[in-house]
Image 1: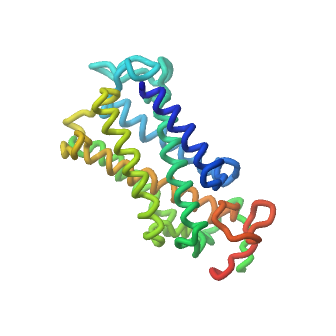
Image 2: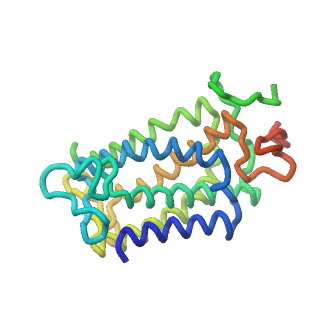
Length: 134
Length: 125
């Protein structure tokens, strides 16, 4: 299988894991999508460095776009790339993040260090919820 | 020093997210047993994927800007560290959002959340 196919398979598997197998249902929660939006931004930045500087290089036979050029950076946008990285990396990252968070939540649900819950923040945060602990 | 370009990026991720544990009390590192149990299968699964991708030629690494330490399967140490650092950052982010918003995550006991927000901290209160 190509990287494209494997990355799509990875996404399908973690979605099935979350919604049907362990039923953590993270993908149906606003906490997930809010956190994912933050993670995605920083993935684009850090992965852009790794791929734009050609520290990691890709074979055009495995991705939708072309191979990483032998000299100079790949396209910033286009030819199957977003912020220098093959768009497949976004699927790969999604699978990595979802698998991690699903396992973490599943373990908590099973009683493995479920508490103490995160928070409250030590500093005032805009949009913070009222803390019933006072 | 260019050998540390890849792990340097990872170090930025570690340092860039550490404040969440301290200032938002994410308690991800603090719950290290839960963290290790989470990371173990993630590192194994994604290392297997990586070894396969390297063997199949899907991607290669610049030997001059990675540590050069190769694990079995020609897996760079840098990549294994990636599979530790990035998942921790993802958990810190998830718990940071929970810290600020108190939104339901799915590990709370029945009745602890109302309309998707945690109202009862149970024994942690």
